[in-house]
Each structure stands twice: as structure tokens, then as C-alpha cells.
Image (cartoon, rainbow, N blue to C red; front, side, top):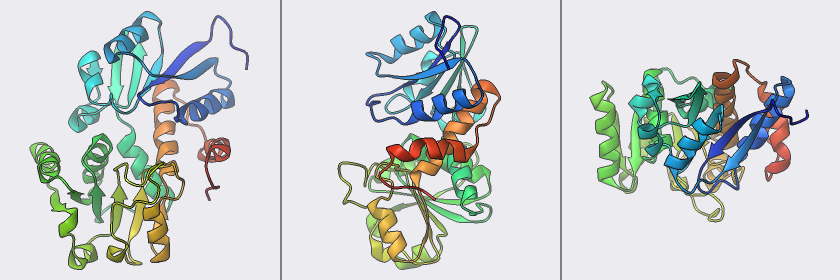
Length: 283
């Protein structure tokens, strides 16, 4: 597909952003549907400048990643109710100069589990972490009638997330990682790591002791580099069902693309495009 004077621009704003696979996802989808658009990665000097550039250059849509998912809210015109509830935005749409914000992280996680045959309803989910992705997943999963346990090392931070959930009518337990026992783990069906622990270059680290895992657990790590984290290696050795971070990346990207264009690219198309950029193939 040729780039010409009618080509529309989409992008990702983040810092760092050079590692992002989002350009592969969205440019593959644009080509698949023969849409005259291109998607690029930008590391803006300021977030306010990025929002202004979106308006002045008529950038049609943008992905928002670390560290901007919360701060972007004050710079846009409208926020989807779920994203407002979560307190984080990862998707922007420019509608004639009015910028709307959405969050597809939570639904991306839901779809990644469902794609692997895992049902959320009536399940107990332990979410490790308290950042933007943890918030998105917690709010979305509770809306899907799962029970949620927020787990982390900082009591005040996990308590703050639990309070945010309570303020909107949801109830979530909290537990400090060092206080997790085998009795607690017996009640858990799904474990999700939303922290950067295990991400390159610290690939030998895991956020959870392998001894706490057993074969009734589904273990989901939202990290996609490396493809199989240390946590997932431990889970495989314990006979757990595992879900890789690349699955969530693809599903949240598909949800973004659908918001922007109304088209839903096939999962397998995006996965095949990403495989050369991963350290091993996915099934």
C-alpha cells in the first residue's frame, strides 16, 4: 500500500517506545483491510505537546502506553465511562478535533483468557501489581463477575486500588506477597502478573515463589518480552495452564483497531505478523 497525500496517521505515545510491537499490529491490519493509513511510534517531549499535535496534525487515533495512561485524561475532551472508572486511558480517538479516551487493557486480558478456554465467571483471580494495567484488569474482571485479590509488596498502594474498587461498588481482597500462604492459593483459580518483574533485561526474576503454584492454577503473565517469562516457566513445570502476554497485546490491539475503524482484524493474522519479533513461536 502506497503512502500518499490522503494517508491518515495513527500512532503510539510512550516513553520508552522503541520496543513497541504496536506498529506491527496496526500496520498489518491497515494493509489487510486496504485502509489508507499508517501507524508510527513517538516518544514526545511532553504529553501536552503530544495531545496538541494530535489536534493540529489531525492524527486520527493513538495508543497510550507507559508512563502516560493516567496523565492523558486531563488533556482530552471526553473519557469512556469504563476508562474513567479505571482511571487510565490507552486509546485515543480524534473526532474532528475532539479527543476521546478509551481503555482496552482489561478487555484484552479477558479475551486472552477466553481465547485460551478460560472462563472468568465465578473464578477467583489473584492480580499481582497495582499500576494502570492492574487497575484495568481488576475493574473489568469484577464486571465479569470474577472475585479479585490484589497482591503486591506495598500495602498502601494495593489498599488504594482496593478502595478505588470499593468506591465504585466492587469489593476486592488485598494481600502482601510475603504473606501469601498455600491456603490462600488453594482458593485462587487464575494468577495474573501485571508487574514488570521478569521483563527483559531481568528475565531471571519471578514475582511469585514457584512453591505457591499448583496444577489447578491458570497463570497469565502480561509481559510479552520475553515470550515465556520465568513465572510462566515455573507454571509450566508445576503443570499449570499458561497464558502469554502476547495474547493480551494482540487482543487489546484488535479492540483498539475496532474502535478506530469498525473493522476487527483476525487474531491469527496479527500473531503471524508478530512471530518474527518474538523470541519463540506461540501456539
